[in-house]
Amino acid sequence: MTTAIPHLTTLRLELGEPGIAELRLDRPERSNAIDEAMWQELREAFAWADEAPAVRVVILAGSGRNFCAGIDLAMLAGVGRLVAHADAARSREALRRLILDLQDCLSGIERCRKPVLAAIHGACIGGAIDLVTCCDMRYAAASAQFSVREIDVGMTADVGTLQRLPRLVPEGIARELAFTGRSVDGEEARRIGLVNRVFASEELLLAGVREIARTIAGKSPLAVRGTKEMLNYSRDHPVADGLNYVATWNAAMLLSADLDEAISALREKRPPRFGD
Image 1 (tube, rainbow, N blue to C red):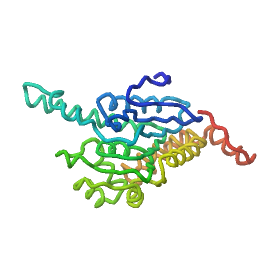
Image 2 (cartoon, rainbow, N blue to C red):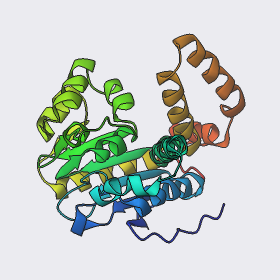
Image 3 (tube, rainbow, N blue to C red):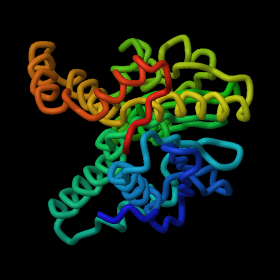
Image 4 (cartoon, rainbow, N blue to C red):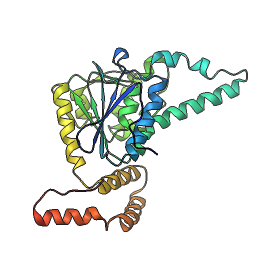
């Protein structure tokens, strides 16, 4: 796969500071609602970040007043036409395959071996919750408003929220949000564990998230990728399986150039310099 930055129409992707890719949802006139193109481009962008050696961490943010208003309602309204078939069974099969594909577009964030930090301001609604729960960490401006809104349009959330949100917040809270569709502000999101930290403004949010990204980008890339692999695996498997997997991983990856450089840097009292 080429590591040239892909051409994107609904996202803005930049390699700024060393090791840090910044990806912005870029449909501000629609509050960054996720249309057909954006679903596919999210998968493409994170596949690129996964493969690009120069990328060590990704920041995901939104352009304009809001982070993301969820799935584009015009896309949702057009689903029936998209999967139409004279045979009802084939139509339902097509809808199932469409849902699975949308799920995969967001699961690409978890597949990306590099940590993904979401910087959230303004509205984060519906499909946007599916999106940010795929990220490794979430940070919010005080202005942020979170809502699992699918219940209010008569549907069951189907691209990740109901599977991932209960792993981030207490299950009773996840159920309350999913059943009621009520909004949670930035401070409540921090209290329930949905976000790691709240910043007073969008400017402070981006500055704070960039500082965290710099810290991660300065660590061993191999160790960071292994850490994400182990955390994701251990989340979904028993402790014994996780211990067995990390033993196998480190049997292959522990004795690395990064380990040698980290030890040398500690001895010489200098910052380490890791290769990509």
